[in-house]
Length: 171
Image 1 (cartoon, helix red, strand yellow):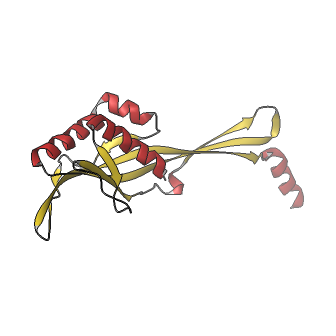
Image 2 (cartoon, helix red, strand yellow):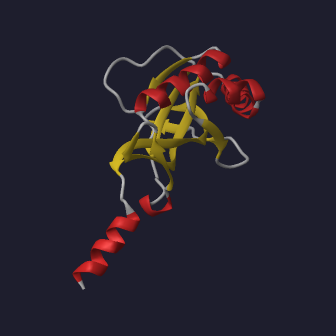
Image 3 (cartoon, one colour):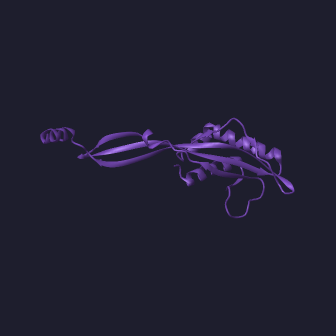
C-alpha cells in the first residue's frame, strides 16, 4: 500500500507545477477560492502476496542467519479534478497537469517519492455538475501512482545437509 502522505506529496508536486491550490476530496473545512484542484484516492489494489519476488542471501559474519528481501508492486489510483468558474481555464490546467505527469521532469520528481505516474486513459473528462441553481464546472482524469514495497527480514538459516542427515537417522 502506498502511504497517503506519499500520495499527498505527489499531488503537491503536480499542483505546484500547475500553479493551483489543492485539497483532498470529501474532507472537512472550507473550500479554497476558485480555481482549485481536488484529489481523491479511489483505490489501492495490490498484487497478491504470492507474486512477491524474494532474494535470500547469507548474513555476512553469521552463518546461522540469512537476510530475506522481498518486493511487491503497489498501486494507488487517484482521481484529480479541477474546479473553476472559467471552463477554458480549468481544461488548460488539467492538460498542464497531464503534461507534467507524462514529462521526464515530472516522472523524475515523483520517482524521488518512490512512485511512478501512469495515466489511466487517454482523455480528460468533463465532470461538471448542476448544483440547485447553477453549474459547478470541473474537469479531471485518473492517474495511478505505482511503487514497489520492499521488506527485509533476518531469518534463521537452515543447515540442509544436517537436516537431511537428521531425518535419515530417525527412519
